Amino acid sequence: MRERRARILDAAAQLIRDSGAAGLSMRTLAHRAEVSLATPYNLFGSKAGVLMALQFGALEKLEQAMEDLRARDPIDQVLEVAELGARIYTGDPAFWLPLMQAHWMARGALHESPLHPRIVSLWHRSLQAGVEAGRLIPEANAEFVARMLVVCFYGVLVMWIQGNLDGEGFRTHVLYGFVLILVGVATPPARARLLKRLQELEREMPQSVNRPADSLKQKNNSMGGPL
Image (cartoon, rainbow, N blue to C red; front, top):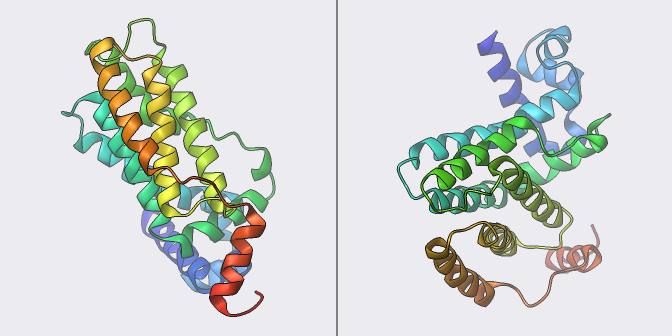
């Protein structure tokens, strides 16, 4: 079952790379993965389930990074993993852009909350460690702060997918939002470092963001004509 699951996800990723969201149907996926049509449904439930499983591939990388950085200062750990998340998405736009667009258009996905327990948990443990290490104030509710980090990351992700931000804009907006949130719950020594980081990020922030229409126009110009 594990081997078939991996084969189906590999096939789904390749279909998205080859032909975007339009090329991903459960029938085509089963054919590409060389399994019966029933198998993707049995393992993932629906096309939306396949898309969610592909998204969780990025989450698994971030979870591993959290483990690898566990000996680091908890605040540094949170910011480094946030930056890694930005690099994962913007480093492979040919895969992530159509994947996320397809996921949002899949049945039921439009009403799905980004606050999935597993995603919140990614940040929760590090934030709790920050409270215990005296880097964050004891009054801080680590789970609630983790939710705000997820909302921040998800909002910037949407802006990138819509064409409002380029890859560097994605990174700086995510980090700026995370630092702003952490400043509010940091103890004085940690807060001083965060404020310094905030000033550094302000120098890197773009002066403006593209409107989706502007981004589309730029793509048309770069390709020599309309899409």
